[in-house]
Image (cartoon, rainbow, N blue to C red; front, side, top):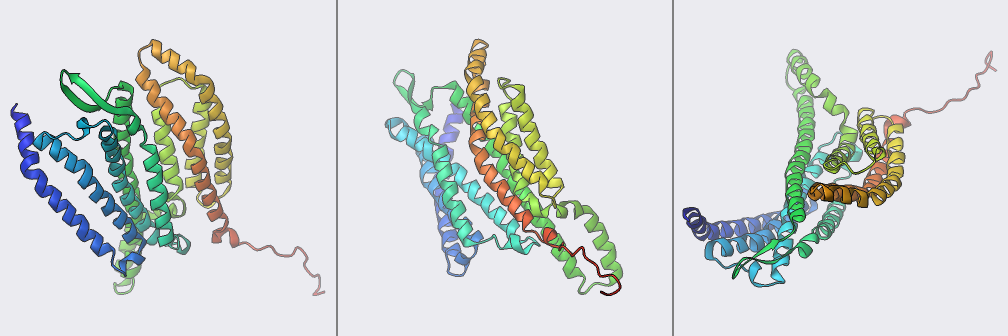
Length: 374
């Protein structure tokens, strides 16, 4: 009982001040980033979207939590429509904030690149496109909350807004775990690349005023540490993220062993080609092979999932491990849906490598040579 009272006091006396501070902070941030000069910066556009998502989350999910835990006014449990809707918007706004922040990190990575073509991708047009497309995708992805949540009577005359499916609860837990791990790692990768860019620029600036002996010594130490990362600059921005996302999804698929060996070999081949393409950052053949295998895998995976879905479902139902199968099947189907998007991104990487100056540096010369000056 003491814990329940402490929780109630915490939301009663601490919830309202935090709510006000959060709303004021978001409004001030919106006023700052919405100024005429800052609106021209793509990163400011991402932060505007980020603060709007935070403001919506504070005014919906956090306010509902204050009313429910602080004053025993559970709006979600009082209406059959509000129950799934509140859970749905809670899921959506909870992912939109870190999503926009990740986009801002990627934009900082682009704008600090040493490659002029890469810096040109940091545009307001791309920012609006990413925000709109990403928001629509996340809104559609979380429709499952509208279907799964409903008002449940757990004891006589006591109702809560909850999901009665253990499979869905397991999916929600794995989804939250995947989101918690993936987003910080993506942001960490972007920040490492930005840090490498900053180190490189700092090394250039040091040369303007420090003596040559000091410059040679310090640059040698730093360059040896970051040289390997700098080499990946042209491809790590897209290809590494694709390989990482593919690896995460395949790992979740392997929670249950219901797909044929050919499916596993196919996914391992895609990951291996992706890593090979990152290592051979100046070559285009690895990217073309990856595109070919990715295209074939869309057809092969569709056939494998269609043929083995019912077999795997029946096998795991008899073993009372349907949760593992459901999670594995969800990620397998979701990965199949993502593969066309990944294929488009990989084709963009291929086009970038074909347009790179490395491939344009060779010009054919005539095989004819005059003899005796004739």
